[in-house]
Image (cartoon, rainbow, N blue to C red; front, side):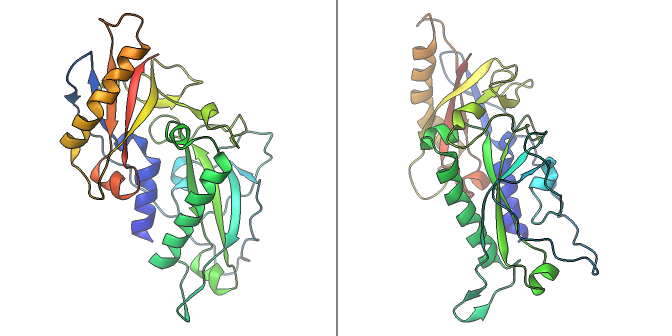
Length: 273
């Protein structure tokens, strides 16, 4: 379970991406921040009743670290009030494989939960693959605790959250179903600079993510090779979005090895906005 939650943290923590910024020429390497430490939510006391099966459409006011925990016991809130999390799917845990009962915290169960929630996230959010990649919407998932599972709880819960800055969740003020563009990805400064932070485009920003570049191959290509492949397409984006073709800026982000292994196999192109 620890490995699976680490991969969730890698996907959710967008500040880990390797950044480069350019002004019409070669990208310049920048340092990569350190990932935040995650902590698991505590199990309920032995006398507590297992929480009921979650409901699709329920809203929660989760903090960033709570969204990274494998379990949660937050009560739902009214969706008309402030909330940071929306349950878009609830399914049944895969309890048995090859005739063996599986523990809820086993790697096989957690991998199956992640696969289910990622697949149903795409169906719920809609839009194109590129639109989803260029949004700050992310799937997270929760299961019962070991104690609750032993007492018969067998559900998995898929939630949708939106990032805002480094280590923060945004308020879900606009219905995300079928509208990934409502949570589009922008930046507070040129990617790779000290003032850069990823924010929703509805907030104050000066740069916008405009396209992605697929990085071929099954193995991680390395930072330099990824930057080299992204440079041409991202430079073209800078030229096409500039009012003066002789004076333009562009930036690119490429995944780290950990992000690649977690499924981020593309680079992102940025232009001033």
